[in-house]
Image (cartoon, rainbow, N blue to C red; front, side, top):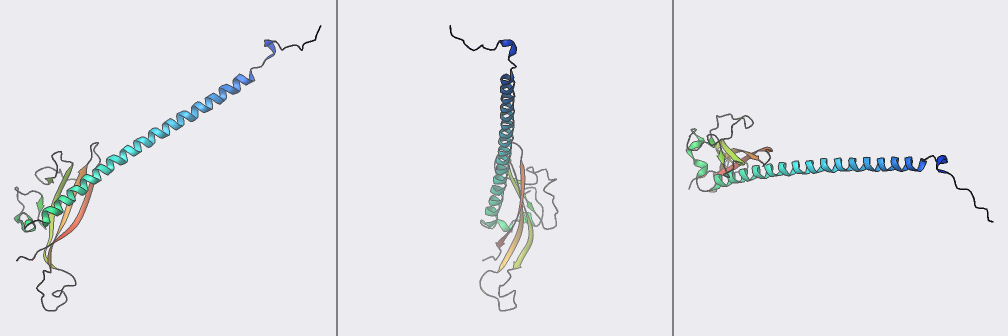
Length: 180
């Protein structure tokens, strides 16, 4: 007869392998939960940045629309820049002081670019017929036949995004003011 080694009986096993395996599984699970939380936070940050960018794009569109309005035809000569008019509420005089942060941004005080009111602006005239720096008239020389006068304006625009992010931009804009 052959002698086989005795196997250990179940009473003598300590279960250290089971405990180590459970600890390793617990650590892997904790790392997974941490990675999930991190990726969820990054997703929310990316979404917020996207809405911020949308608001900024809406603001820049409003500024570009106001600049285009000022530079087309004789809009820069509009009487709304000298006397506040309810017909053109987005045109403001030099004397008015307006805080864009406390303004209601409604049809009674600004111009909407889109029907959803995500892009609004108002224009304030800052100066009339300023002589351009470096022109002959500004340096005391004989007047040239070229136009050397400008009207300057402050365009204030507000853009909002779908989730309510709001951006403001102020832009100084000048238009040649020589009349033919």
